[in-house]
Length: 223
Image (cartoon, rainbow, N blue to C red; front, side, top):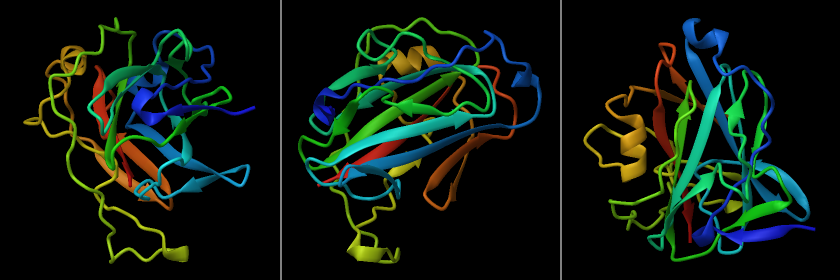
């Protein structure tokens, strides 16, 4: 049985594998994170373009893995202006430790994310840290995006899919204000990250090993 959660009440769960508290890879080479977005279609999950403009009622989930050990924290700022921590939390699992080479599903349970709320963007913040962080209450101090998703006619897609080039994973510029809890956790450690696409997979990498938390966003566009 699939249990649905509207994006305006976004929640997530994650399959966490045991891993050492400190990764041996932290001092070895570039760090890499990969995210794919999946949509439930006729009872089966299919990988979709991260910039695909979703429709009301669409059900989606993420897949995530890294080449280093650490800890994952996920929050969401919805198009309706609601902000909250997705993971870790009691409903989605408390073990947010991630291990190099392991694949994680967000959410891990039968729960799925159902697109709901005013047309616009869900700003899903991904905070990845080589060490465990205390998780302060999620407190927004910024305003949600008020832009409307637009199809990029230069991107040719089968079946007439609408793809918005401003959706998907994005670097958060240093001058852009973060929600208070993320700003507190990240401090001055905002890093220059590289964003690449491998078919429908989003790849985020840091040329240097991460020695502190890093934050980036994944925009979900929807009508």
